[in-house]
Amino acid sequence: MKKIFTLGLFAFAMFIGSQTLTAQNTKLEDKVEINTKASEKTEVLGRTLKFHSNQKDDVYEALKLFLSTELSLSRNENTLPAEIEKNKTRLESQMKEILNDEQFSKYKALSNE
Image 1 (cartoon, rainbow, N blue to C red):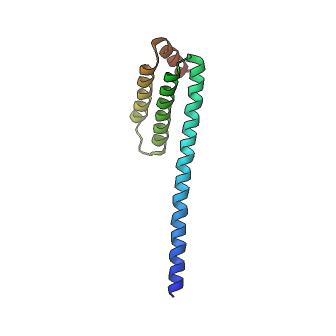
Image 2: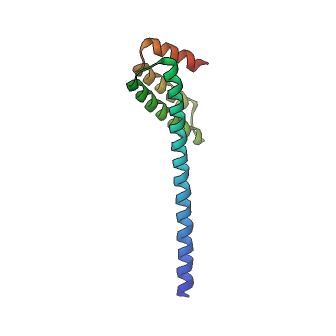
Image 3: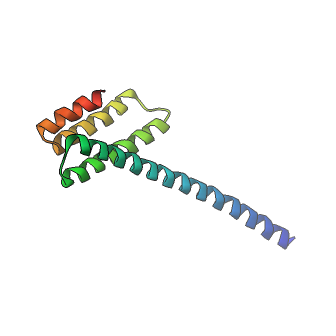
């Protein structure tokens, strides 16, 4: 009886452990996807707007924050349209701080397309 109880406990622990690993893999995949998208967008903007390396790093971080917030908002069923708009407004204000006036006007034209 003691061995059956131990075996059952072991099987339960393995089941719980596999669920935790699956959740961690999903988070890691999301992080990689966000980093890839942010990097690609930064490269496209870099070629178009021709910004400095400091600007490139800041744009990458702003896009990464925007994309991760967008992903978490899209997964939440109770997300209000105002929250999505607030995320877009935050990205725009960060880009305005990072870019100069000429670059920002080009960025606005690109983002409206």
